[in-house]
Image (cartoon, rainbow, N blue to C red):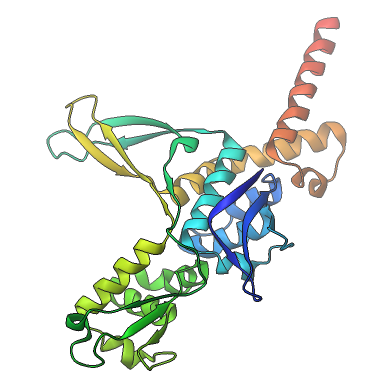
Length: 294
């Protein structure tokens, strides 16, 4: 699959690479996913993308370091396309109605191709804007702030902290992403800590404004009580859950093909699932034909 990233990867020469090429998910990646813990989601995405992204523009191969430098929206987009390529465009899932007096199971269905993707108003490795006088709190009137967009490496660094101290995680994210505040280049931890709540809000708003956006909140209606509600689609949980659910199937396929074709495990694990399924279908048809001939 070949496509275009909503954001893009800036290399060390300042060249933007937006076109990507995705390889099929093989048994090797499925096995990798089956044995990694859910708490390692960010590092798991990085490893998966480094295996499956053949190139970013003219950049090939795509190392884990490069995959980690991709902004969050691009990583989400590549994961969506990988899921689409592996399982098809349609997503079907069950959720529960959030209304306390209902709580019934609700089935949702949507196409990945229909998810809205908003392009950024501009693309740049660094963005600069000016804080309002009120946000500066008298420190440096109308101080300029330069920042980069959060990426996969940031997600990996913050993953352990997010569950226990969200405020501290946000402070650490700002420290990592902000490259300059006024005359402070780069700002240290104390400089970021001195930012007023309004300054933080303005920086977060500007980050959101210049970021590409993939809409993963789905509006649906409960078939039981008839009320509307919004479902946040947890892409990582859903996609990795699909693959983990199939981990037993993977080993059954390896056993079946190794038993009949005498192929080595390593050879079978290099195949994408559609190729494994094709061989299994051919074998099943042939075995059925031979049985009927007896």
